[in-house]
Image (cartoon, rainbow, N blue to C red; front, side):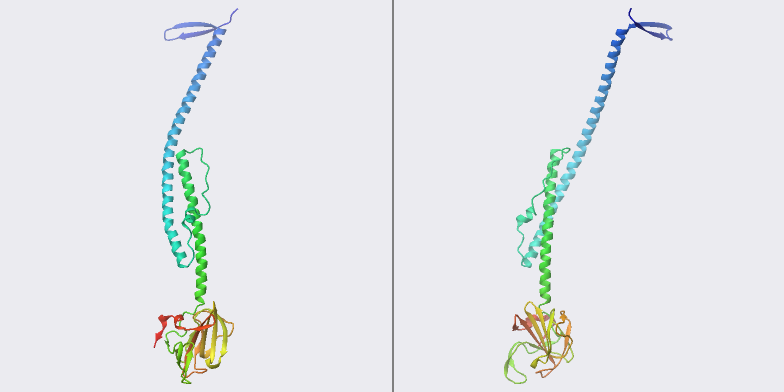
Length: 306
């Protein structure tokens, strides 16, 4: 005996009643069909929703990608401008190195910097165009970074050179030992004021009142501070680099042997000791053991010529 399932439909509006009886087998088939339709409907709804979300993501990504490409292009352009601006630093570096007698850095080295650019792996979530721009930017940044590092090394080398030059200049006689006083008898042969004979005068005489300050003309170390024959009370300074200076006929010595002195420091006072007929300073400059004319080693802006 077959099993049936009855469904009763009552309409209050029409005051009718309908009864439908379905076999269990048919009911099962209808249930399967209904479930299949429901599943397909749900699947289609999910698919359509995914398609809609995907289309939204595509539109959003396309918009974001366009903005990204625009920003990358602006960044790449800015980096190219930085490279152009850096050319002025390279030109300045060449001028500085030429001035200080240092060989200029070859343009190919500036172009490459130090080492080649670090190639980055492409980003899988970016477009080919974006990856190409990024590679260009990475390479540009690497070269700019290396150029900056090269400039840093060059500035360090220039700074060392300048410091060495400044140290050398500080030890080269270059100022007036008695500022503002006139240069008298010069370097060369002259009639000796005491013997009236022609003799070699190995320095310059600077007339000044007794007690006027005598300034050392460069940094150095006092090698002698005592009586020195016809020079009378004399101070001798070893400046290094082959330079020495002598200050004769002093009235009073204010330093002692071994003292470290700085350019412009008062080391003695003008006097009339030794073979001298009037208060003055006898000033000598020795270069590598040779007595030379001191005039080129005196700042002419502070000299009164007779």
